[in-house]
Image (cartoon, rainbow, N blue to C red; front, side):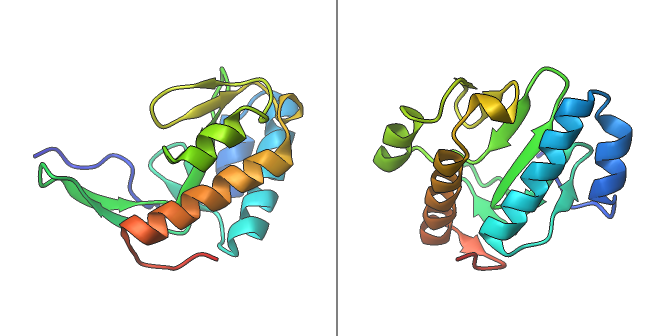
Length: 145
């Protein structure tokens, strides 16, 4: 079985953002997101893998037997878009997406070019919905909310 790539690291979040994010507007968005996610979760930002900024953590185990730990909510300030790992496939989340703003979505990620493209109050609600979903369905090392 392969080893998980997204694991907690000791890398400092500020150092990562300052060295990894070259676009000043995206860098500003990343620091704003750190502040917002810390406020919303009550958890300090931590690096997971080489480029994901996570908040809180939980343990998952799939039917296949694969298991590991992951941040409860997280984001990455990637070159092409801010990537949010805050989506749970619930009816409430689906409804919230209708009012989020300009974004793209894959199975588990929301992609946004810049924070001004979305409604931050809706992002907050998506985060809370995901936190509630994970708390209900997974063993959490830390309970958010």
